Length: 346
Image (cartoon, rainbow, N blue to C red; front, side, top):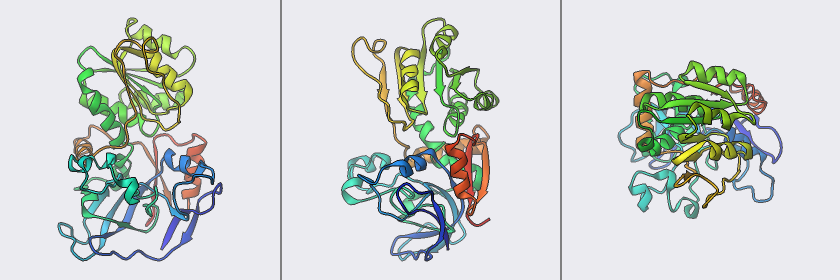
C-alpha cells in the first residue's frame, strides 16, 4: 500500500510503498477514507535528531476516518464495512485516568510505550491503518468522512477546553479565541452552540478573521499590538471570562493574559511552546491557566453528535495521498484556511 512517511530528520515527508497491515488479536484494519493534516505534525518534523521521541520511518496522520477492512481474533461489536472515526489519544485502558474515560491523560502510556497513531504508532495517511483496540473506534453513523475527520482532533481538542470553561461562560460573558485557523474556527462554532457568551476572535490574517466572522464570531480583531486594548474596549474594561489560545507562542500567550478578566479561565491549547507567568501580580485575581490535551472518547462522541445537528462544521480542502507533501508545505506557509484533508483511497 501507499503511505506518507517521515523518514529522515529534517527532510520532507515522502509517499512510499509499505506492506499492508495485518490485524493481530484484538486489532482492526481500516481502509482509510480521510486523514487530517495538522500543525502538530509539522512540530514533530521540526524536532532535532537529539531527543526525537519516535522511531523512524513514521507514517503520519493522527486524525483518521475509514471503513473496517479486517478484524483480528476476538474483536466484537464491529463488522467489515462499518464506517468509523479513530479516537487518537490511546491509553492503557486500566489505570485510574483511563477508568474515568480520560485516555488522553493515561498514567502509564509513556511507561508502556503506547503512542497515538501518527505520533509513534503508524498513522492514517496510508491506504490502510492498523488500530490497536475496538474501543478506539467511534461509529460516524452517516456523517461525511471528509467533514468528520478533523473533528477527531480539531473538534475534540477545543471541545474539551471549552467544556472545562462552561461555568464561566454565562449570559453576558465574553470568550476570546486567539488563532482562528484549523482549531480556532471550530472553537468559535462550539462556543456559539454551547454557550451564550459573546465571542471575540483574534488572528494575524484578515482571511482567517473573515472565516471567523462567517462561522459566528461576534467580533473579529486583528491580533497586533493593539489587540488586548481593543478587547478591553469591547468588554467595557473588564476583559474576557474565558480565553482560548490556539497558537501558544510568546505574543499570543501575553495577549491571553492581557485580555483575561478577574476569575477568568485561560486555556493554552496551541503547541507553540510559550509559557504564561502565574502568580500574584502577574494576572488578574484568581485567573486559572491550563494546558489541556486532546479530549476523552466520550467527548468525541459528543462532538460528532453536535456535527449531526449541523451546529459545527469544518472548512476543508482536500488532497490526494500523492499531494500530501504539498498539503504540508501549504499548511506551513499559512496557505490553508480551515483544515487540509488527505484522501488516501481517492
